[in-house]
Image (cartoon, rainbow, N blue to C red; front, side, top):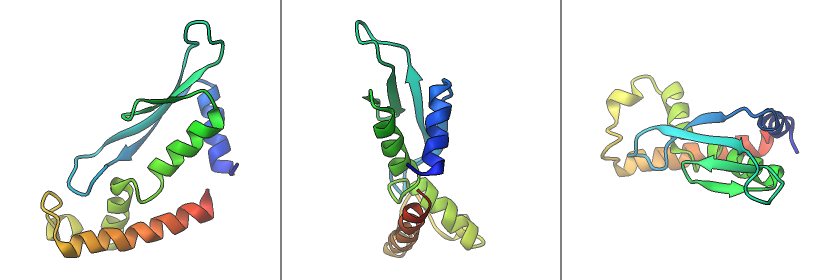
Length: 124
């Protein structure tokens, strides 16, 4: 497991909730993708880990950290792709209507998404 994933794992074990800005589509609004640990459930004496807003839960901390990272730090997170585009192109927010994405804008997101995925493979 990478250093970054190990750091997330350590924070979860301490009870910290981790949030990252997230968009599920180009035209959706920003929300948060979060991961946290919950107390024991019923007779099961193992902590449970949740990813929200998906409300997915896992008992294996490595599995939940991997899932969270794959959602937050890859092209699945249109918000991350958008943040990268905003850093690269001055006036990006004014030049493109994110609520009505054109073919050109979708192509920009697809190309930048490929770069985001490559960066994920290198860093995670």
